[in-house]
Amino acid sequence: MIEKNVHQHPHSCQHNIGAHKACVSLVPIFNHLEEDQMDEIMVTAQSVSYKKGEMIYRAGEESDSLYIVNNGKIRIYRLSESGKEQLVRILNPGDFTGELALFNETTHESYAEAIEAMVDTGVCLIKRSDLQAFLLKYPSISLKILNEFSSRLDQSEKLTTQFATEKVETRIALFLAECLEQNDSSHTFELPMTKKNLASYLGTTPETISRKIHELEEQGYIKQKSHKKIEIIDLDGLLLV
Amino acid sequence: MIEKNVHQHPHSCQHNIGAHKACVSLVPIFNHLEEDQMDEIMVTAQSVSYKKGEMIYRAGEESDSLYIVNNGKIRIYRLSESGKEQLVRILNPGDFTGELALFNETTHESYAEAIEAMVDTGVCLIKRSDLQAFLLKYPSISLKILNEFSSRLDQSEKLTTQFATEKVETRIALFLAECLEQNDSSHTFELPMTKKNLASYLGTTPETISRKIHELEEQGYIKQKSHKKIEIIDLDGLLLV
DNA sequence: CGCGGGGTTGAACATTCTCAAGAACTGTGG
DNA sequence: CCACAGTTCTTGAGAATGTTCAACCCCGCG
Image 1 (spheres, rainbow over the protein chains, first blue to last red):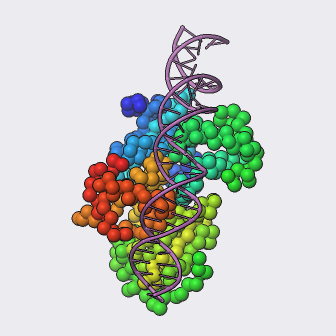
Image 2 (image 1 turned 90 degrees about the vertical axis):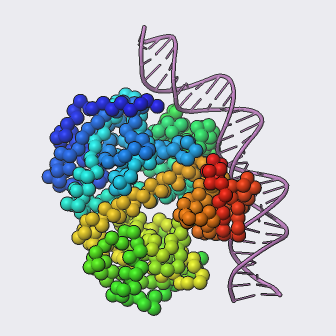
């Protein structure tokens, strides 16, 4: 991996409220704020941008900020004890990370890497101390964050249960069905990541992904329009796999 | 499973502050409260007790309370889409559950079952509305809960990564090592659950647990003193499995 | 003392991984 | 716009890992 080489964003500035608001207003945690509350937290924010392959943070590093994605994509992954990596999630604009260590006074447990080639990945930083002061001042925002944490915890436990009880083919089928749910209105959607990354996310290998998707196609449940586009033909059948 | 058949605890009473404090003061979320804050939340609490096999709640049911374990044991498990169950955690006195739906206005995603035969399992209930009002009044407690959620989320993601990247033998080894950490001061400890439940927790079968533990024993890393007691002989070796 | 549940063991079977090779794709630089 | 380089993706075959099913044991409890 490329060594850390953080470039300040051209527009980086502690008081560039307009630009920060545009990005932060997308975040579910903050999108219900009053105009003046929004300004209050935004003046404390900073921008940084990263080129493809650069690391935003690594496991073991001290953590003291919330990272909100402005543009580009970030890959969050973990390393197991034996050094194998698992993709935890892909962040798109409006998503955030760093929340784990934010309330824990601890260090990062995962790795965050910019992965978009075409565009630099821009993030907006809010310092832990600023955020905590803000939460103490406006307690209702804590409830919002607790809400967000709850559903993320729920998702994580759900995924763990899937790993514990379902075979790879079923996990893939469930993942495809979930993709469909998000892009509703159509039976065709684009995979949100490469199949290699999907394999890492689902705890399997690219080879197995390739084969199982091929099987699902032969059984008539789905159809691969291209490498990344998939059409769901028989959702009910797919979910019974 | 036994149908729901909730018995009011003999001491159940909305204002039995003394008894509730004894139980709740063990909970990490609350154990830093002022005396009068503690009283304030405790007057809103209720007690209920369950016999072995009774369900405290089920997936799909409306959730409106935090459950704090007073005595006995509770088994939290989830069902996957295909109906197989995975043990999520075992609650002992001082542990709590119900937090997921607490901040989500949603329903339970898991099942909670009393599993102690000898003693009835007693829980202390705090209603969502009472707790939320309390949090808005004392914002610092939210930070404490956010902290707790963070580390639980971290643990859950860590476990997911283990499932995604490590084989069963390694997961067992890591679990045993973790048990040792908790019961430190000795190289011998008691398994916190039956091997059947351990299999469910680790996403495998009792047969495989049995065989792998036997292998670890033959390789000289551990020694089974009895069905539930295990001695770690070579921790470093164990962790390299 | 007998019952029932957990625990263990064996053998056949199913699933997935690994390794290897070639094809298809993406982005880069001419 | 094209050709090249580096990935990602696909497919095959053999090997490793874990599951299933069935039988049996053992222990705690009524």
